[in-house]
Image (cartoon, rainbow, N blue to C red; front, side):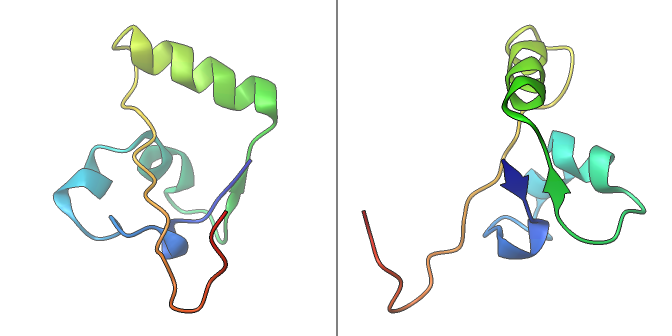
Length: 67
């Protein structure tokens, strides 16, 4: 999983302030790369209320293919 805040529609909004990635990326340059196991672990921690959930909302670009 690659998480890039620059491609998130919620970047620079109040939702962004409560996203686990904001804390993980603080001071980092570029996208965050998580292994599937790491992403699962963060999801489980969020389900239990121990960390904020991933709030990534990919920006829909014009002309982008939809699946």
